[in-house]
Length: 318
Figure (cartoon, helix red, strand yellow):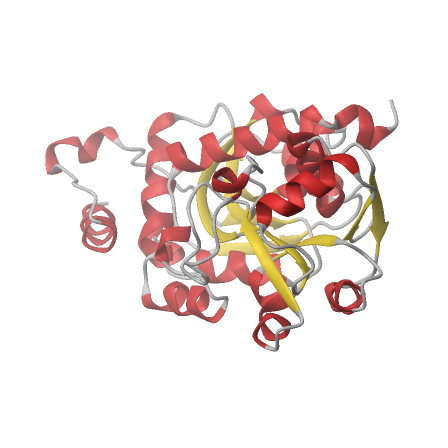
């Protein structure tokens, strides 16, 4: 126990008073901790979870069992979690798929049934258009308010579609036509050729074509500018007041004892501030600003969930 708190404090900068150590869950964990992924083994989310928890097993003096429960976006993963007690022995991926699945009333778990515990990655979405198509973001916004706009994305009903609807409502883009593609590469090609007008993409998906002068980003849909492209304004600066990042984090069942939650949060933050996870972030074009604890991540996830709720009728055809 003492080893855990000192290690966490050294890595995260958290102040841990030795006098409060006995107040934490002395008997936790009681065995291996399960980590539930909602997508395929070896995919991006599975890799994230493994890097994020790499040091946690040593810190908590236990082992981790990684399980992938695929199907229905996050439906099968959340159904599995719903059958587990709120004791901290089961952790699970929290991302856009989690929010979408709960919003649709699937998975047997509602928003109040989960506690977003730690955030590990944040991929900002950029408003990307054909190079020189619009003078600036303000010109795009004015055009979009009174003209038909073909907005490219991936599958209908998925995260990209939801984000497009949220942006539509924020701008007043009443003539938006959503055009789904299989992959981001197809989206970029169709932007370059002028077949579609706009797309929301993360930095790596369009950076090469932007450097070649084929496409350009008008805004980043985050509260603050991105370190990847500090010259690109935020949507809030240019009349697109939207925050729609792709985030990956880890959650626990609501009702888990507070001292267990605190112990898990400190251990996971320590693990994610270790060299291995920081290098993983660098490889994904991110830095340690992506890492956040329960308070920050819970607030962000709530904003995401409410944003999805705001377009639920359009999304589900109700």
